[in-house]
Amino acid sequence: TEIGQLLSLKYLNIAKNSLNGPIPYHLYNLENLEHLLMEDNQMQSTIDDRIGNLNKLQTLSVHDNYLVGSLPKSFQNLVKMKELYLHSNEFTGPIMEYVVKMTELEEADNANNDFTGTMPTTIGTLSKLRYLITSNNLLSGTLPTELGQLTNVEQFINHFNSFSGRIPTEIGNMNKVKWFKLDACGLEGDVPSQLGRLTELELLDLSKNELTGTLPTELGSLTSIESLQLYNNQLNGRIPSELGKLTKLKQLLLQNNRLGGTVDDEICDLRSRDRSQSPVILQEFRVDCKREIKCPDECCTACN
Image (cartoon, rainbow, N blue to C red; front, side):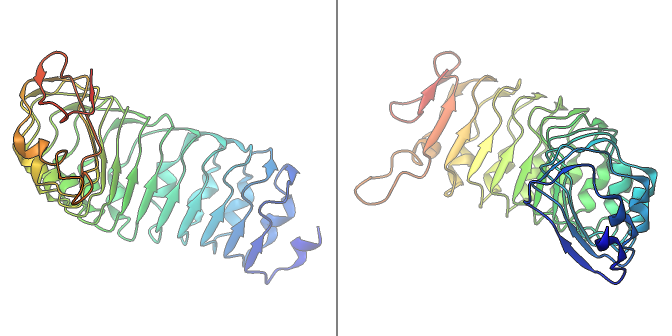
C-alpha cells in the first residue's frame, strides 16, 4: 500500500516477480504514472474502472498474466498511450474502440485473448502507429478501407480472427509495412494487385482464407519479400513468371489451391543456382504438382 502514496511516481516496473492475485488497487492512485510494467506475473483479476485515473500513462504492459473480463469504459481516458501490451491474457469484450482513441499510439500488441468487435473506420487516425497485433482473437466484420491511412505501420499481424469480406485495395498505401499477416481470417475475393506497391514487405501471409481469382503479376514487384504464403485458398490460373524477379524470396507456399499450368523457368531459376557459386535463394517451394501443376525436377521442394 505504500506504493500508492508515491503520488509523484512516473515509472513503475514490477514485471517478472511471480506476483499473483488481483492488480493492487492502490496502483490506481498513481495519477502521475507514465509507465506501468506488470508483465510476466500470475495476476488474476479484471482491470478496474479506476484505470481511467491514470490518464498520463504512455506505456501499459500487462501481458502474460491471467487477467480476465472486459476492459472498463474508463480505458478510453488513456489518450496519451504510446505502447499498449495486453497480449496473452484472457480478456474479452471490445478492444479496438478503445485503441482508436489513443491517437499517440505507436505499438499495440493485444494478441492471444478473446477480444471481440470490429476494426473501426477511425483506425485511420492512428498516424503514428508502427505495430498493430491483434492475432488470435474473435474480431469480426469487414476490414475498413481506412487501413490504407496507416502509412507508418511496419507490422500488421492480425491472423486467426473472424473477419469477412474482401481485402481492401487501399492496403497498397501501407508503404512501410514489412510483415503483413491476415491468414485464417475468413477473407474472400481477389488478392489485390495493389499489394505490389509494398516494396518493403518481407512477409506476406494470406493463407487459409477463401481467396479466389488469379495471382496478380504485380506480386513480382515485391523486391524485399522473403516469405510469400497463399496456400489453402481457392486461387486459380497460372503461377505468374514475374515471381522469378523476387531475388530475396526464400519461401513460396501455394499448395491447396486450384492453380494450374507449368512452373516457369524464371521461378525455377531461384531454385537451381549453382550451389558451388552461391546458395539457393528459394529454399521452400510448395505447390500442387501431383495434380494440376507441372513442376520441373528439383524445382518444387514438396508436391501435394
